[in-house]
Length: 183
Image 1: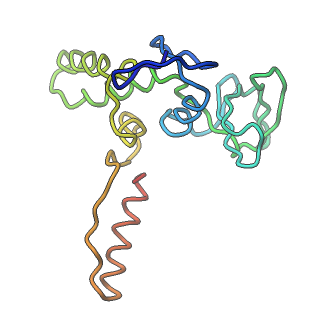
Image 2: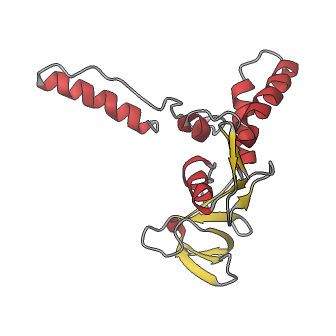
């Protein structure tokens, strides 16, 4: 069952998450692509996500078996083996939404002054996130606790540029800064 926003529905062929819910195949692909924390370089024994645009395996989770000379040998879910350029796959640090909820809850509570309060609020935030009872904006889910200098805002309003080259360039600088931080 996928729980969220006050309703539940069955997810035929879904993947269980650690909280007992089920994600459809498409929901899992969205989670892995947009919100799951990713590592830098694929390492043997770790799970990774195929990112190669033209590959029939794009979006599949694989297990890295070896990395040599810029090439990664992987084990596919089907049991087959495949080879990809190192840049075509990305290591996954999170493979279930519950791992994301742990990271986000801890990050949100990190502003508390004492360890006791941080632990208390981590638990409260984790409860709210569990099972998709509360879903923060996508930029929060992707960025909170990631250690990356990214924005938590989903939407921006930029004033219209002044009708001059300098005004247009100033607006472009604002847009570039927003996009550089994931906005």
